[in-house]
Image: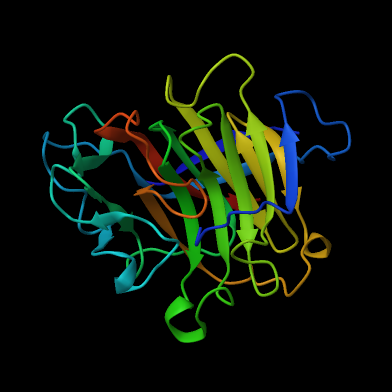
Length: 277
């Protein structure tokens, strides 16, 4: 059954953040408030199921292996589909766990590629991040034409990334031709009296043909429009969803001896809406 909601509210890595906007939970007067929109739920996963079950195979598939199997970023982990790295907790959550075994690390990266993709709408997840130097959790979208045009021509929208050594700051970014890797268009949101690993927060974008708006707990902290990107606007086709926890990499650096393991990203839900009249 489809449900209609109403809102009214105003990877592949990078080491350098050349376009960086930082907001501290205050009102933004220079963003035009959004018109009231009706959002219809079209896809979701509430992660209901027995503890230890893998995520729903009708909704999620896996990236497996190391960076040598298709991605780089100098990450250290090996991605698996083992329940100790990715499974339901029996309480309505998905848990992605990064584990250290000596000098080796395992984690998980799940995606909706080949199962679900959408052009435009509202994409959101309610989750709690891991923390600690060298941890890199992310909730992001990748153009579903990646296998034909490659990255960054396919486009990438990072709804939430976090450096584990800065557990009070999240980053929202876009990557495309001419502004990818170490040169994204990016903004940040900082919790003044809190950390993203201490409680659940809702991370979302609202995306249409001429803008992508980034939200934390329905606070609009960043808007990116075609004129803001120093290259081609490639956000005009369907994108699929990715959730992962990386260990190490050019964005976060390496774990230190004091980085606590295991570390978990706990996801309450992922929901996707389309705008309706």
